[in-house]
Image (cartoon, rainbow, N blue to C red):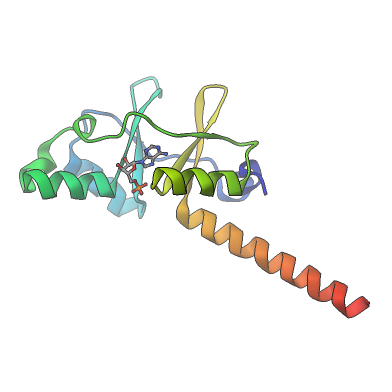
Length: 143
Ligand code: AMP
């Protein structure tokens, strides 16, 4: 299954924030949107980094609650691993596993064009397995 197929069902909206936003503001976005990471972009929408709940926990663990006033730019990951929509679900999981992260922005023509989380991966892989299983059952019933 390709990423493009997943995005056709899931949609291509990516929740973003600008780098001057504080960690507290990012927490509010994560909580209200029920997500685990935001992509940090400049005013023109160019991706600058990614900031996940794990970065916020790490910042608070190291600096205490005052870290909540820090800008997102101080704690985001700037070397973002991305994937093209022509790639497969399997390739995405492999890269997430190697990098030990749970969010993967999708790029198209150099622009942000979707995001897949580990939750999406599990949901779509389970659906795929169910389809494979019922196809196999149907096949066995006919032989
Ligand atoms: P996560 O598991 O996605 O909450 O992220 C764990 C760590 O990896 C955090 O430091 C994130 O900023 C970073 N991270 C998340 N997604 C990516 C990605 N696609 N490429 C590089 N780093 C990432």
